Structures are given as structure tokens and as C-alpha cells.
Length: 177
Image (cartoon, rainbow, N blue to C red; front, top):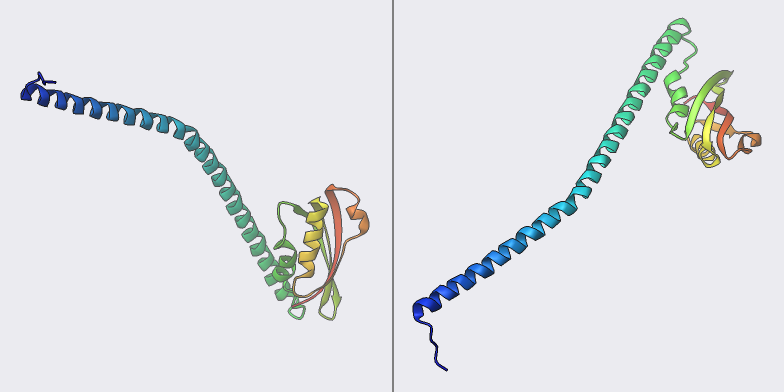
């Protein structure tokens, strides 16, 4: 079979074929990129919402840290006043309250705190508050028992009667460090 196309027409047809293939490839690439971009929009919006949540949590943690610093600075002022009035007492309020406050979390809220000096370097404290669950209260008592200087942590069984939002009263005996 004889080819009726001239060399110029063959070159023009090859050029046109290459142009069609290239343009088809570029159009398909653009369509795939648009689909990919459209599919990324929900992920981007989800990431923005999570970023806002993390930012709010970070601010709340910083606020809690600032509140703790205020509490400890007040305790240091009380300590200075007690040392001025009674230099022989040698009570360290920041250490004493720190035993109880360092382990407070979202699950445990302390409402009142009564400290009684028993002499001989020992003291007892009654801590009243609210625990979100039995497990949270049990974990709090275990953590207190693990503290240096804590002799005993007594939580009455009646405090474990409820499952949630438990009003508790813990009697803690400890020695000064």
C-alpha cells in the first residue's frame, strides 16, 4: 500500500498528534488537581477547628498555671507572716498545701481545707471536695499516699456510695518534711 501523504503533511500530523496528547494530559492533570483541592477543603476546615480547640485548651492551661502561681505566692506571704509572728513554729505552708494541690485535676475539686498541728512534727488535714467519679477519688487517695511524708489517707466508705459527682472528705495524717 502506498502512502499518499507528503513529508510535510506527515510532520504536521505528528505535531498535531503530539499537541493533542499534551493538551489531553494537561487537561486531565488540571482536573485531578481541582478534585484534589476540593477534597482537601474539608480536611483543612477540620484542622482549623482542631487548632482552635487546642488554642482554647492552651489558654486554659496557662490560666490554671497563673492561678496556681497566685495561690503559691499568697501561701509564701502567709508563710512570711507566720515566721515573723511565730519563728519557732517552722510551718511551711507552701509545702503543706502543695501536697494536696499538686495532684488536683479536672476530676477533683477541693472546696475546703482544714489543717491541724498535732505536735512532734506531724499534722492532720481534712480535705473536702468533689470528685467526678469513684476512680478519680481512689486515684487521688493513692497519689496522696505516694507523697513523701504522708502517713495515712482515710476516706470513709460512705464517700464511695455514689458513682459520679461524689462529695468527699479525706482525713490525711502527715509529718513535716
